[in-house]
Image (cartoon, rainbow, N blue to C red):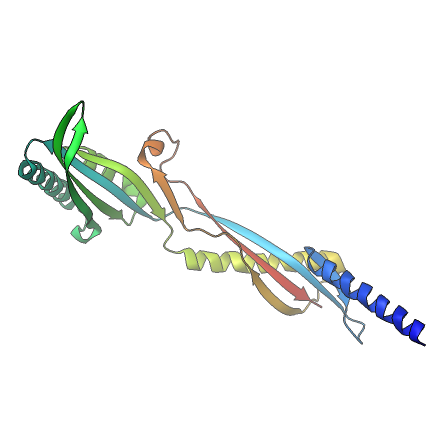
Length: 228
């Protein structure tokens, strides 16, 4: 009797180990306990290419000279000129934000020491179709240098929901092919972690040599769905 018990326990251990290995695979099927129904668990995946609709242009203005007061004055004059040109072109002044300003009394250049002033600001554009025009306006101003651009998909949550639904449909199609039946019932849906980003960062130097200024971003979704 004890020998039979040990054999039964060993078989149970092997069965449990087999189930653990099976759960870790992308697709598996198992017979529900005490029923004749087959439960199938599959992974569904989907992705969507989305064009960013918002651009944050980060700009730097820098001046050097022998007088700290003079370089500070010149830097803010440059900044006000940029702001005025953008507002005149129709940009909302609230979309222009000064991010930081600092001075350096030991700025060494070409073997000489200067006073320097650096001002950074961000321009937000809610329509990327006008990005080239915005860049041209900024670069026409003295000492204004574009550093980088951050592109953003403001409708990321809505887009992700669409991709999530597509991932469930992808899982359903796999289950139908696996069981060769169409009348499946969803038992459980589990959202899986996946990399999903609605922003795109570009150094401006890179964009000057790119084929397109605004690239698409990819929104991914992955689910694990149980059917019977």
